Image (cartoon, rainbow, N blue to C red; front, side, top):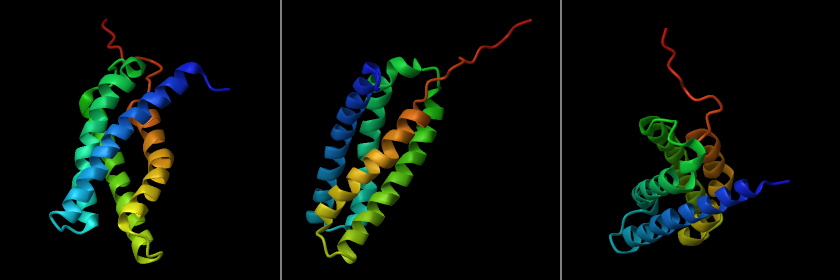
Amino acid sequence: MFRKKSIFTFLKAQVAAFIGGITDYGLMIVLTEVFKLHFTFSILISGTVGAIINFSINRFWVFKNQCGYSSHINSQLLKFAMVVLGSISLKSLGTLIFQKVFLIDYRIGRLITDLFVSYGFNYPLIKYWVFRVNEKPDVIESN
């Protein structure tokens, strides 16, 4: 059975993902439709902006009590950046496949791809790797 704390953390993470995702998706549309960038480049730029928002919300609200900032922010940023690179790559590739192979508009293909990437890739890595709870806090022993 799921613990209440795990469900609450999951829901808070979905709020963070939603805010970052709306920013990401909206910026992608603007960059593609207004500035005429190819959607794969728009996804790269918008994904970066959305990731910065998502990281900030996750670090300072969602996982604050879990990790207690026991992990240094530089370590979390590096891990988060790796997750974002994978996420942006998967989103760009998935959207391109939906558009080229299945002839689905890039905006719809992106939404479908986002569902799989968000729940199957981003959330597990962010929760269990980036903001992982340290079982044993790092303690420096003095003799």
